[in-house]
Image 1 (cartoon, helix red, strand yellow):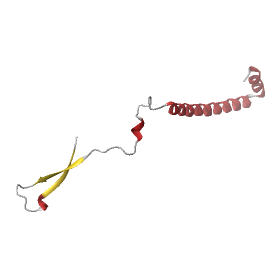
Image 2 (tube, one colour):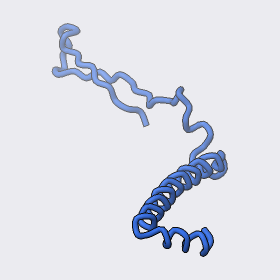
Image 3 (tube, helix red, strand yellow):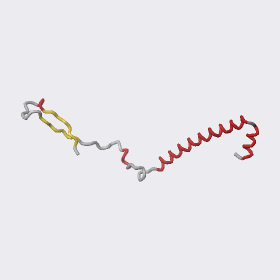
Image 4 (cartoon, helix red, strand yellow):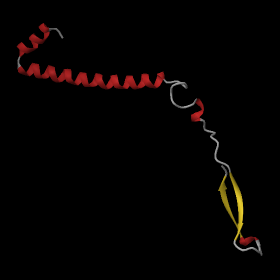
Length: 93
């Protein structure tokens, strides 16, 4: 706004000045929000596999799970029947 435009608003009175300041404040807040959204979008779009901090395969849905194996343990030294055998899983390293 030019100084002449501001002076015209001033000459219209207090209500015109207050209304203009409030309108400009709302526009400023809206533009700041849009600016923040654009900065976030630019940041997201400018990332690639060499600077994103994660490898391109980090979003692979077929991730490998830790393998487990079955280890059998016995409560008593003499196995009388299969009910005496307890199966537990032990993680492989």
